Length: 201
Image (cartoon, rainbow, N blue to C red; front, side, top):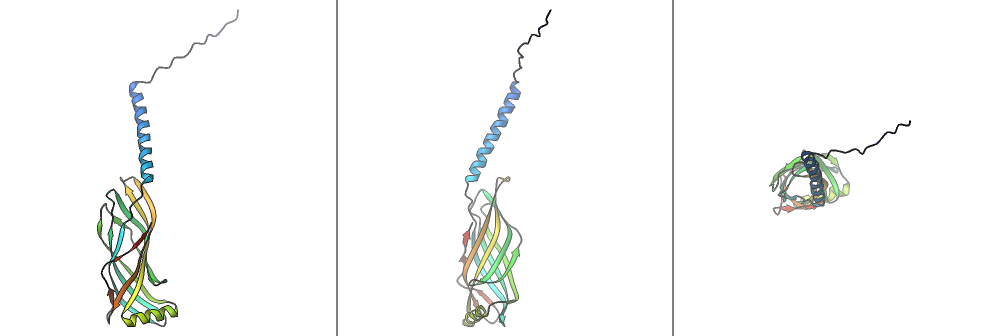
């Protein structure tokens, strides 16, 4: 006599309401987080505004196409965002005469809260830096007339931080051109008050 194994359909016990609610909650959190991340991706961060408040130059000398100088620059910065904190990392500042680089320096990281408005300083020094003869002669001619124009540039990686965990990173270049320095027997200082800078983000 042949034995037959009889198969009966298996019945699965439905999940408890607590488990169902937990699953629903997890899915809802994932969907909301994804939506927030998408909106955040579309946000175009507002770059800070840079202005030069003052520049002093001392010492300053040129001899045998070698320049020795120290620029002391006071920047004004405004963070226009009420939602994002700003951190500037790997900050480098450059001093130029026209398009000729004279010197550069590195600054520590800068941190600015929401709606920040304040100042920070930067120093650039050049010690017997060799430059092109034509450039040296042009600087000397301007210097003898009492006013020399310099260009300053700031490059950094900028981090916009929203809600502590959400961050956007960009590269920023700040260009401050044709900053007029009036010289006397002891050094030089900036003319014409504030100087606005161009921002490339």
